[in-house]
Image 1 (spheres, rainbow, N blue to C red):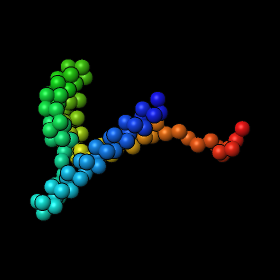
Image 2: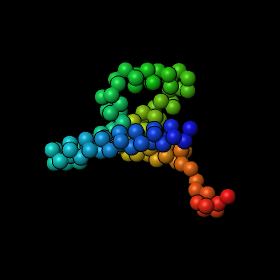
Image 3: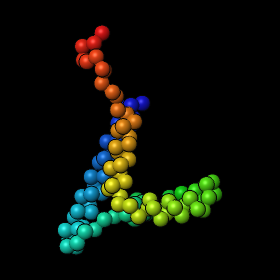
Image 4: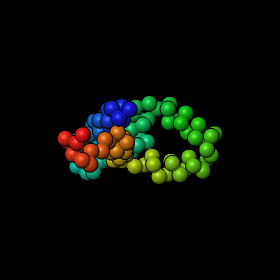
Length: 105
């Protein structure tokens, strides 16, 4: 199971680097800082899934939770959210080293 989390962490980290590279290229070409929010990145990847996710959240949890999610999470930079998710997945899949060392019985 640790392998799955580490693999997911690696894939998410790769996506974060791609998003950061895309933002940096856009920033250089525009001569100003350009940051892609999560909402725009999500819509570029799969436009209908955001609408379906909103319907599920509003039905199961409530409209107020969706408003908080929409106001707080979706405007965040996509590369930062992906980096945080990669870190979280890596922490879940991390194996602590043996306290006795490498050659413990």
